[in-house]
Length: 266
Ligand code: 8IG
Image (cartoon, rainbow, N blue to C red; front, side, top):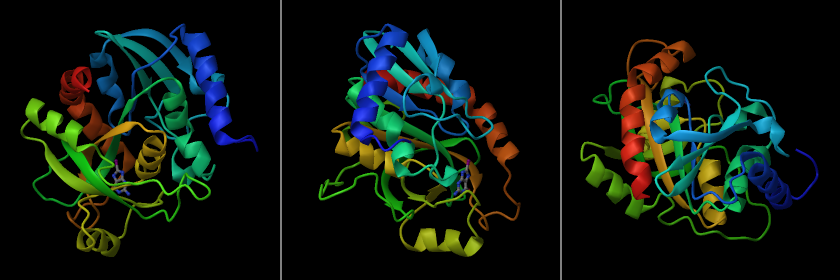
C-alpha cells in the first residue's frame, strides 16, 4: 500500500474496475475464502474476469487455493462482484490492504457483501464441509481498519435480516460466533478452548476486519463459514491446509447451490 488515503485508493480502484469490466456499477460483492472457490461457477455467467493486480492498491495472492482474480457476474438483474481471493492479516501488508477489496466494492456501488471463509469448528456435529452462518464475531487481531475518531456501531454487524433469509432458504443452517485469530499458525488446543469459553464456535484467520470495513462503508454484511476441519484439540488429528482444500472441493457443489439460492434474495 502507498501513503495514499485508503478511501481515495479504493475510489481509484473502483473506477479502473468499471473501465476494465465494462460494468458501470455493481450491486452485491462476494469474497470467496478457503474451500469456496469451486462454488463460483454456480453463481452465473462471468461478464469479465480481471486480475486484482490490474487495480490500484492490490498485491498478488499469497495462499494456494486463493486465485488473485475478480469476476464480474451477471445474475438475474444483478451485477455481482466476486473476489476469488482475499488479502489476509497474516501477510503483514497492514490492515488497510486487508480491507481494500471491501472498500473498492463499496465504491463500485455494492450495497451488500457476502464474506465467506474456511474455518475450524468447535461443535463436534459439524463434519468437514458444513456451512455455518456467522451471527457475530470476536476480533482477536486487536486491530481496526478504521483510523481516527469514527465510532462505528457494530450491533447487528452480521445482518439478522440476511440470516433469517438464509435460514428460510436452508433451514438446516446453524449460526455461531466467529473468532478471528491473527494466524498464520493454527490455534493451540488451549486457545481453541479459550475461544469456546468466550463464546466462539468458529475459529479462523479472516473476515472480521472486512466486516468492520463493510459496516463503516454502510454495506449490509452476510458471513458464511465453511467448517473444513474440527478446531485443534477438538479432534485428535493434526490440521493441514491440503485437507482444508479437499474438504472445500468435496463441499463445492453444495456451497455453489447454496450461494446460488441465497444471492438472488439479498
Ligand atoms: I480452513 O482451524 C481453516 N482456517 N485459525 N483455525 C484457524 N483458521 C483456520 C482453521 C482453523 N481452519
